[in-house]
Image (cartoon, rainbow, N blue to C red):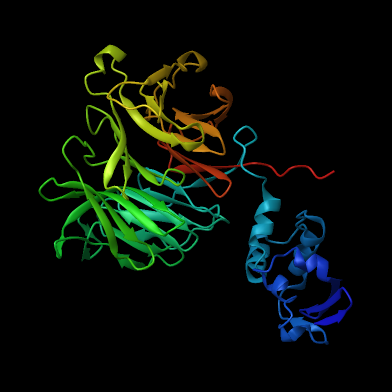
Length: 443
């Protein structure tokens, strides 16, 4: 690499490029180009730095560092550019230029991806880097952030209960008590190859127990994985494992007065350092939601609709989401009513305020399968699916501000948000939609 003051010279595949150290610094120290500025990098000492890569792609990426804009020439395959960006450590820059920060009110349909398996998908999970995975019976189909399909993960006819896309390299899957050819109802897989890395076990008093794993959640800060567990003798609890070593680190058994059951949904809350555990209709007649503090080994907050359903016109709770910013939990019922409860108050049936949205909907979908509504929260916005659309709510009163709808595919059976994308899985056509926020205009 030749340096003359702030000037830096490269020879990429036979073509010479000259730029500045200031431009390269914008790549970040974690990138290959940014690392070249390190004082103890030998290549900084005189001479032209040769890189045996595609010069046309390098020109596009260098222009991205200079201007913040991504302009892909006609005839250049985007996947080729993305692979070159991966080599230089510039994928984050390419993603940031391809779509803007996530905003539910500005989402646009980027495309639809047909399924690769017979039958309908049952669950979709977004990855933090913009990829996703889709569960079909005993199969999990994996897509990276470029929406390239990776080798699928097969559980040898064991039905998938839940799946989590931890990062670009790891996927965790729960199933019945036999996962693949080994004991245990939960495993960690390599997302790029589909290979099994860890088979999680539940042990009590130094004895390994057979179990069925259900709902999943994980904490990225300390690499913990949480899963609801059911033993052969109907013992219920929440297991905790280290995703790096695969070792069990904790287990919370259901105690008297605590109705964890075979939990339908888990959600880790970083702010309060607690795990939300919810059992929901139709698996159980009565909804139970609790906050589990593993430090104190107890449920520190709980709510149940036991004994109150009849007075609420049979408003069964179908999904729940905790929103730490507003210190509340939102639930939704089969009529698409939203309910809000304050995390600062507790008690069975108390503190729940219902807000009807049925008047905002424009009729039903004739002759099509209806799906239970789902909830998600992201960036201070609340999302709820109903039939073939997803509603977006904003503000302290959660006012409906926009609606996402795609005519192709039928009702939405599941959706997920991650990596600044929203993925919506349809029930009647084996297809999922990808929604992105357009990048802001550069003036």
